[in-house]
Image 1 (cartoon, rainbow, N blue to C red):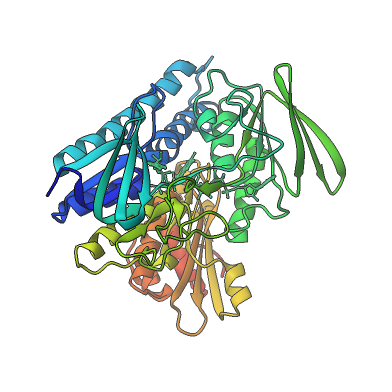
Image 2: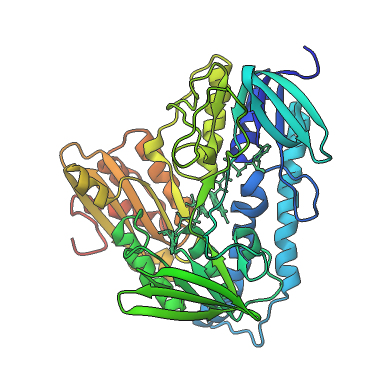
Length: 475
Ligand code: FAD
Ligand code: NAD
């Protein structure tokens, strides 16, 4: 095969694209992957949003800041005290940068070992499955693919009255790279980024005010879980205003003056930094040349069927640039599915059982339907729940906040959704995902032996509670 001809060309090396490229290469397909991302040092960096300015760096800072917060907020209850605890911010940020480099470099090594050919620059799909690559130096070359997979990800949504300037009004990348703890951090949007990065800087000592347009807190989560989490965030001092419509954000001297209105009228808020985290949009501008036949929807997302096929021979799209939740693991599984379909294997994703995790303290995790969704659909359901406060391990850890809630079909007992808020529920949710993937019933979870004393007993008791037979609480 000529050097510029490939079985598979992937545009974008985020968790959707790079995983797709590796799986395609594993299956014996000659594979190229093009990526345009430049790291903090101005050099090419594989791994996309997730590895560079998303999942991995945010979890690094969440973990460091949690350790610091625990020193003053958790350890005293264990009889441990530390005087004059302080953080060296350069080390705090530097540790995160090292982790990012380790993982982005890891993708390069995986490309090498799997014989994926990387191209650095911008890819554009042309008619006939050709891809034009514009290198960082402006040079151009054209590749030919039997299959082309668009995995160009997403970018932060910018508000017209609060444009990112990288200094005072910042996006996720800016909030992961502050050179000083802001005295006052304003956040627009109490979504996943607002809560995670708001928590990081709150724990580091900032006064954090979060302005959320919607009247309900975390409307996509089960509302029992959202309420339990909101109570804890309030105790931590995260100042969350719901139903707050921001109308202006002006940089004045070294501060941002924010104007917002809620049911009580208009308010002003002055902050040192303003993080705008109001969602992300598909990054598809300039990706499609004339006459490719690939369609985008009203939100700029590439239209695909349930197998991520665009309807054009050999052209597929995966990850944040298509419908569905903007989650790394969702994109990666789509990448695997598409590579396997191209190689003539079966490929399928159960979109109803994708886990969601918010890495706050307590963590929030869920999979399947919420109670409000079951109600709206008219599905007959029953629920069971159990609090971490009645679990020996959680209390021993001094982390008793939160609960697990199981929703099952009222007639068949099949699990419809599992919702959690509490310690390390990011890990506990996997049990619920497995149970649901195997079409399990709440009875199945209730009959599985769970080790004692573990946090997983809360899942067990919540499942028992569906039939009002939890042992360690009144039913
Ligand atoms: P991306 O990761 O966005 O990668 C797309 C890549 O394509 C980028 O490198 C981009 O530069 C490149 N590209 C774009 N256009 C072109 C082009 N024309 N030519 C060549 N290359 C191009 N998700 C989770 O599941 N768990 C988390 O904990 C989590 N935390 C997050 C924290 C933050 C702060 C943010 C912002 C996001 C987080 N996410 C998390 C979401 C997650 O990062 C995304 O869902 C995921 O990165 C999407 O993967 P992707 O491959 O579709 O796109
Ligand atoms: P989001 O959709 O989670 O939250 C945005 C919030 O901003 C919403 O609550 C929305 O109502 C609010 N909002 C929108 N416009 C507003 C306005 N003008 N004023 C005030 N509030 C407004 O989006 P995000 O937090 O930016 O994150 C983007 C996506 O990245 C997430 O949806 C998620 O898919 C992904 N992500 C995932 C994780 C994780 O899995 N742990 C972490 C971070 C990001």
